[in-house]
Length: 115
Length: 116
Image (tube, rainbow over all chains, first blue to last red):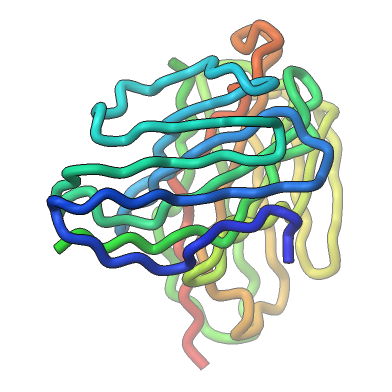
């Protein structure tokens, strides 16, 4: 247990489905992140939230919609995904700003398969 | 944006061998971090380095913050089967972060495979 919990761990969805990924942390962190990790590819930063405000959207398609209702929870809403969106989606949290140098804490990820 | 060049991309070694991997950049970093990702899990922080020239150990792992602040290496001594996984370097640069939360740049990872 890292202190960052992601649910579900595995998800299979059709291209017309709508689903949501959830991330929760109680580490007192104020920055939260979504990363996409495809097979044999580097970590791709998708979204950054700092004190509940989105500070970065890394050119992510609109079929991915993040939501951060408070500093402890982060969601990624999915709709009309494509098979190439199949990947491990990782959530991370950290202290904000320069204190992120103490490192990001990652969740175990959601393995998403789009069929 | 900034880039970290991590090498090697993958390593096939025998159990008991020592392992060495490194990250380099054309930019200066203020912090270097090394993470390990086990199959099916998220990355976990192994070692953090905050000062140029710093050498830090964590069990069989040793990492160093390059004196130029543009590189770092990670060594694993006497590898064992549970060392299998992907190792990521990450760097933080105050100059390019502007105090925002998106300060870490990650390398592409080194896949470590150990043959018994």
